[in-house]
Length: 300
Image 1 (spheres, rainbow, N blue to C red):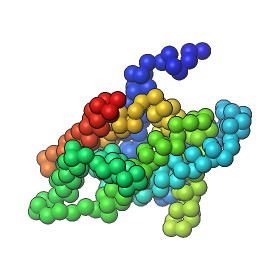
Image 2 (image 1 turned 30 degrees about the vertical axis):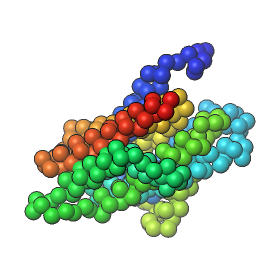
Image 3 (image 1 turned 90 degrees about the vertical axis):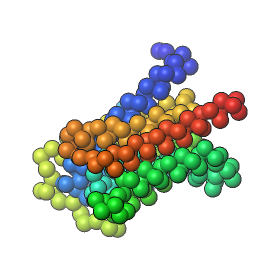
């Protein structure tokens, strides 16, 4: 079997791009699934199924590595990610897949500012300019026909979810670099399922199986096995080899794929202002990550 050290860097980068395609399509799939089940219950089922799907083939490996260090890593990574998905999917109920994806993508610009709060390392001027560019894009996305600013409840919740996704990126970088990545991913999925279950129990009615649409379990199979188990395994493995700034840049493609799928299959229409807003948000994400990449090369 080929050692991971012999695998070229571009293969891990390509794996991250594949993750963004899977995640991009999941916005559309989840939008349909939310017609049958409320967000908290849907996500609790999704992540529980994903954890089960991981435990079946890797149960012995997980049991052999499951110790305090792996539990700690999975908890610290899974807690902010569970909150991020829960808030993001509650927001998705009241917005379109494309808007949800692009507003979620702003987490890439937030990462250096949250790192500043955590470590005291001040963001550079270029990162501040990228944040201003991102805010300008959000402003254009929020313009109504009478040119007044307005974000729906779903849009606001999506931005709050993006904050927790940014925290998750930092936690993966800080706590997910050591140990067995499959065990960490399993614990992470269990924690995410518990977080979403708690949210559902507190704020949502029990789901009624009789109300489920015919295609619901097919949608759940995609988001549980594809965009959870497979995608998170690929992400956690690839981020051990791809620098965090480069990984964040590649993962920002998620919003592009999500919008493309939404336009092609959901019928989402973009006004010129919203389209320009998406361009500015994506440009800010790319510029932010390129700036970090250049700084990393200088330091190296």
